Length: 460
Image 1 (cartoon, rainbow, N blue to C red):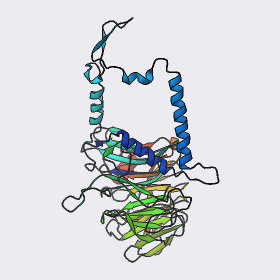
Image 2: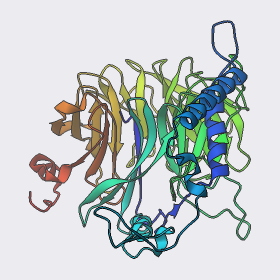
Image 3: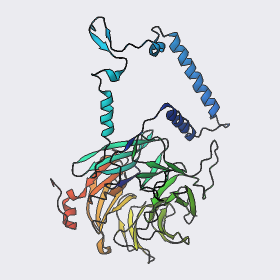
């Protein structure tokens, strides 16, 4: 399942990502950190404490070692202690004349080091490559999956992934370095990062330019270790799952987070602390979006059936009630006074913030409208997706919406999110319940080309 995704524009990722190699000390640190993240608590309900778990693990390991020693007929435990013999010849049935090397690097027929080097070089990213970061759940495994897509060369594959120890809900790209990086000429160097919201109250910032990384560069929020009590919502962090994130591209040290605790926090990435707490929603905050031109105006929607536009300088907000839970929100890329909303009842609405009622309401889908997408390159183009397994393309110019075309994805289970490529205006990336990341170039559709006077793609 892919509940959330985001594109990374061409030229923003490092051309040669760093490949992390863990030593034994770092590996032990990672194991300890993962164990702490499991939040093992001691209580009357039968959950073991940390000491009991460590003791049981140590006992099991000791029993296993004793068993191995008892059955070690060929002294395999002392194998590495035997005298090394560089370049010794082996004599025996079928092995006459064969030479072995104690150091594999001395063997001209073993090319593993070169293969490993080739693998590292295979992580290179071209200036014409786009990346797509997906929050993904596959069975019991959760990860951030980073796909590479190249329109010219038709490349599309998983470039690398980041394993997680918690269920991911939302991802947001940002270039602001929230880690302890040394300042360069008074400013932090821009980077390539993903903010991750999960079922826990914490927000993690991951460096996408590091392959095989095991830890985030920063964590926003406060954990209460070994306690069943939830932290109080406030400037120290959320008290429940982080369901939505939005990075402020105009004030780049600010990121907003919406939570199941019904609050919105405005985080200062320089200090790692929340500067403001907004509590005007009465239920879970499902979606957030900063205004494209006004860095202090925040759009939000939640399970309370309301869309809110908030001036974060004064905390004053204006509210609109819609026909269901607000699944997704976005600002209209061609009109700074309008935004679009998708609801749990299958409606898509356009609202002018200067008016009390929507400009129009579309009965867009048979199920909730889980995703909305627009692109600046093609004015009037709106794409929607839904749990009804369909993506629809709309012409919404002059506030007179019409459905241009649609495509069903019957094997997807349901569709959760979608987004247009920032560098190739007609390519949609779609996150689904089944089947992983889906791609659709809507320029391959005749009805779309005719409605928007768009040239055909190769082969269509």
